[in-house]
Amino acid sequence: MGSKRTRVSRNLGQRVTPAAIEYFREALPLQDKYFRCTHGGKIICRLKAHCDDCARYLELSCQLQLELLLKPWDTNPLNVDAENPYAEDSSAARSWRAAVKLRMELEKIK
Ligand SMILES: [Zn+2]
Image (tube, rainbow, N blue to C red; front, side, top):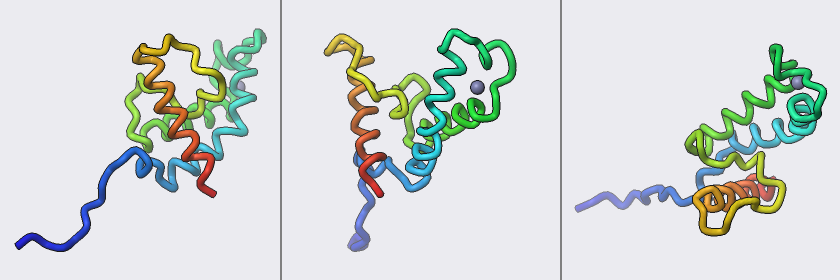
């Protein structure tokens, strides 16, 4: 007979791990600075080494991506604080919606 151990199912919600939440929380306050550095017209970071905050942001963003088992081309939950900009049936839009779901999970767990 089989064992009575409950198998851990791997649905979407369980991809949000404590580590993922930590990365998300630490990255979020750095995001504004990162955007200012890289998109603000005054190119501070892009041509040289990143400043410490930007480097940390990129590292956290990357770790979050890995922790959530996202592929490099999947949308990162850190980047979905706006309207879905893609055509509704595109794969980019599906990836965006999945990231929004993950973000909601990351934000609701206290
Ligand atoms: Zn910077």
